Image (cartoon, rainbow over all chains, first blue to last red; front, side, top):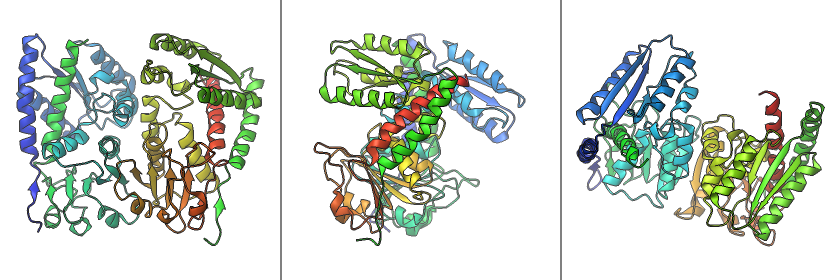
Length: 282
Length: 282
């Protein structure tokens, strides 16, 4: 075991974020503004319904209004686009979250793209992605932001460090890679077609696991003293990292649950509050 | 020296591209369409003027109309935006190229962003970048496209290979990294803050040099049998790679000049012809 392992406590980081947001929500209230997140749930996938409810409740606990739009499975792309257009135009709505996945017959990409940049608090548009990649103001997706927030909260140095990201999804692997790059890390992006994955991970100072496979990252893959961030959340509250096996090798690691997850939710709230604040400057 | 080194002949690749484009331009002519690239040159930087002239001439040799807009150094951001807006709206203009750099007092990013996606044949918008990153239809910047075209022309396998990109500019390092990733390469992005650069490059099956430093990449950095792409073009017709020193190690390499450069120009023409063809489907 390393001399001392830091458990990167996402619950604590999220608590600090919420406490700071509380103050900002109160400031907004003095200006007569209640931040509002609109969530759109299409169809009746129970897991999606749970996620949306969870996010809505988290909003309300902080004094953010949650406007919950629920649409039937049979909704067409055109109908969904119209709903998004209305929310774009609604001055009382500051953020829009379209819960992924939508039913198969809907063009999800087209629906995401319809969300106005300033209300894209979930970071799903290609425009927002491009702006994040170029380090311009925009809402990056919440999980990559959460990863950076945890690294920053624990003052993990990034400049010149070798970060290996396992996974290349549009809302996690790709954006977090570019965000780490913009923070001057050297970044390697790995995925299902990567050869010699274990030996590549072994060179990493920082490992981001975003594969969606339970306990995928093995202890033997980890360089002594590396920092491991587990963005996985698999059935049975299990991450993408074999936590117990990695512990002896890491200098710091996020647990699952209680790691990146809570900070991701807090980030969604922060983006929504930020969007409401931007209202003041328009 | 390797058994056999393939010199990746950009002049030949570009010739093949132009010959195919010739046919497409003739097809368009039968429909009454002449592809047109509008170039915008702001100020009187002689190098920029040369580049713009070169691109315009390359267009005209292929039967693409070149509409050359020249604006004085004192042009304001607002004036430039208005010019771009007019070109966006002009049905006879299919592609718009704003020559970089513009004078310092102009907001170059805002100007780039104003270019309509369908006319962004130089691949400078953040929207286009996001779409490229997500593997959606868009014009990636011409140099990254040229790199992929050369790799494809010589049937260099990418899937599962380790590509190391040196450089992270918005029009080269970043987009080519994501394009290689979308082709299932494992990608490492290095830059000025990277530690242990030589040893990282040494692990690469494919090296893309995009640093802008003459003869920066050393022979001793190259793994035996690697493929080296030199996107540099420094004073004295020198690339970013120490070509002679790398030759004994590589299986294939682009020369400078005669490598990526000519294919980059041909790519700009191809994008413009493609944009004109898209006209037919509107």
